[in-house]
Length: 348
Image (cartoon, rainbow, N blue to C red):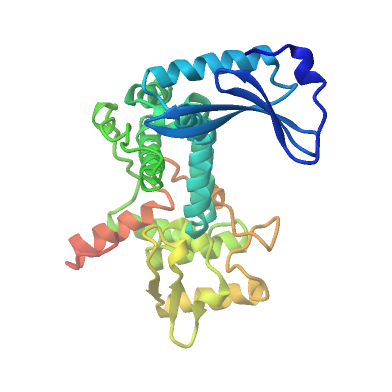
């Protein structure tokens, strides 16, 4: 038998919890501390079960009765209201944004700072605004593709492919965590516009390389940038690896530079043998920056490495803007070692 609203409103707490029944499985539980909770009891698959509809008076009698009607209808249709509520709560918690940030927090500590920043920026700019608020279990391939098409619309085709790969990593994390069973991004790479290989301009003719090296020797810029430029073609590393080199990694006695795994693209430690010329360059820069952390510190702060723009500006100022880049020294080394010296270089 349904009760009047005033009956629930005026119900006072007692020494022990008690219920006011409204009929049809709905009751109001009054606790000794004065809190009042709506409860719905029902039978599902032969078992007695219960579910909470919330606190009175936040949930009014009218609202509680509507929830009771909906729950009874679910039971009639073979749906367990408690299980359905748990699923809705999981969907609300496990949005793509929440799962992506959880995944990022788990895997990113082993990444170099630059890579962390790139992935986080991609999530914030290109993924979360489109599908971040969707329950990850409800996301379909079309939802992900729509987000990727927005990226393609600005002709950022490489970014679209990278974003798809990031989505895949998030979905696979969700699969491993029991949140979803399939990766809706898995088949999308094949429908995205093809990316073009990125080639860095590089001088590969030995005579032209000699002219470039002489230009570096007479470069009028800062001492730190000049020494970094002189060392780069002697070690064949990526510019970022050289910029971020630290004195703790340099062993003058053994003539080696030990780059830790976390600084390498492939996450493998790398040993760079240092030639006599490389050692001479490092000793000259040690006299200037040896009391700090970085071999080639920033001009603005000794606590930060030299900016990547330092290489670019220096090379541009020497007149090589369209013909050579700092990263191009790797192509220079690969070509000359292979074609001139007949020594295939394992640079990658």
